Structure formats: structure tokens, C-alpha cells
Length: 305
Image (cartoon, rainbow, N blue to C red; front, side, top):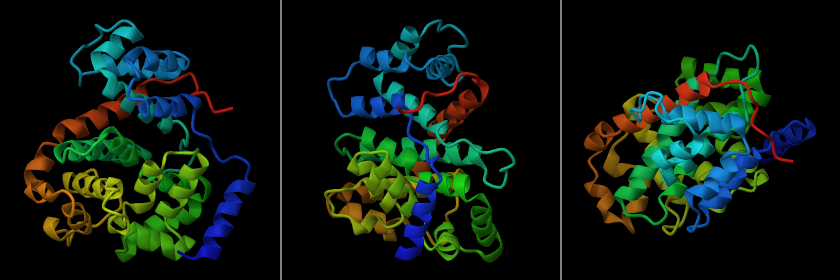
């Protein structure tokens, strides 16, 4: 990273005066996830403060993924049906979607595909953590959801230059990170980590954003970047990747796998082919979330004050 160019970029973002803040409801959901004693009723109280979010979750509960087809009539019933973990994940996903919306005329960067990839990564990271019996697998979900948030920032505030990045990727065969470094002097991980710090995210989320392209740079006590890195790769194999290259991917040789292996040798027992085949449900769930996001419109998510 070019420190001078990075400093110049972040100064421009701060000078603009319009750098978004994460919605209050998302911050409160994150706080609740830190408390193991949080109950469905606690989440209900938070979600009810945002009618638009409540409507989206009700719509989700009535969606084809859950097989209810309009039988869930109120928020409380929806929350009971979905369960605590799904409530947390949905509330955070749907709130974050509306924090950095696409601007009129910005069509080069496919936001729909980007968010589908992000949700898929979130669920896959959670699945990997569960498979390895890692403590608190839900934190891997949040890391997976937000790992590429820096791309949205670059597209939102520097759209023309980020369009050049995408052009370099397509025309010159560069990775997204390489193209970003060439155009901006830093990459989406650097900008994403900076924004996560502004949003006062917990350290494991900042690490997932900063380290998903260099997972072995962290101690073996911190496997969040490595797990999110694998989720990113797996979603790419499945066809919902975003900006990465899998041409030379060999599971056993991957830096994240070697890093995880130090403390969790069971990672070598994971069959990527079987695992990716089992991802159908998670990708379907991600698509359902995106469909709900598109269908339910109207009220604006409340911003942080």
C-alpha cells in the first residue's frame, strides 16, 4: 500500500462530509450478538424501531425459501419461525444493504451480484466455523458479510476510477486487488478496514475485512480472516464469486488452509467438492434475501445520530 495515496484518499472521503454511518439498528444488533444472553424478544424490540426492516424480515419469513407463502402475519411470528441466529443475520444484512446504495447512473459495478456474493460468503464462513467447531461461529458470518465493503466505498465515492479498476481486471487479467493498487495506491481491504474502524466494529470484523486476502498474516488465535478467505474462494467456485481468480487454486496448498491447519488439522478432512455442493441452500438463501431487498421498498433505514 502506498501510505501517501491512502492518506490522500481517506482525507477526500472525510472532507466530503457524506461518509455514511451504519444504521442504528445494525449497531444495536451487533451489540446484541456480543451478549450470549440476548433473546428473540430483545431483537424484536430493536427491529420494531425500523418499520422498513421489520417489513423486510416479515417478507423473508413468508418467502419461498421458508415455505410459508403468506402464512406469517406479524413480526413476532416471523421471528419465532426464523429463529435467533437467522434474525441476527437477516437484520444485519438487510440494514447494511441500505447504507451504501448505488447512485443513479452507476451501472458498471453489479451491486446485486456483489451483495449476493457477500451474503453467500457470510453463510459459508459460518458453515466452515461450525464444521471446525470454532467458538462463536456467528462472528464469522459478520466477517463474511462485510469482507468486501471497501469495494462499495470505492465505487460509491470514486465511481469513475473504480470503473477503471474493473476495466483493468477484464482487459488485462489483473486481480481486483492488483488493479486497485495500480489505480488507487491501496485496495478495498485497506479502505474497508478504515471504514470499519470509523463504524467502531469489533476487532474480528476489522480483521476479516483487512485480512481476507492475506489470512496467514494473523496469529493462529485469530482464524476469522482465514475462514472468510476460504468462504470467498468457495463462493467463487460455486459461481457467486466477485473479482477473484481460481485458476491456480489447490485446496491443500492454500495459505488459509495451511494457517488453519496449525490449530485445526480437521481442515484437511474437508472435501471442497462436497462442501461446495452443499452450498446450494446457502446461495438460495442469499438470493432470497436479495429478492426481499428488491421487493420491499418505501421507508428509509434510520441512520445513526
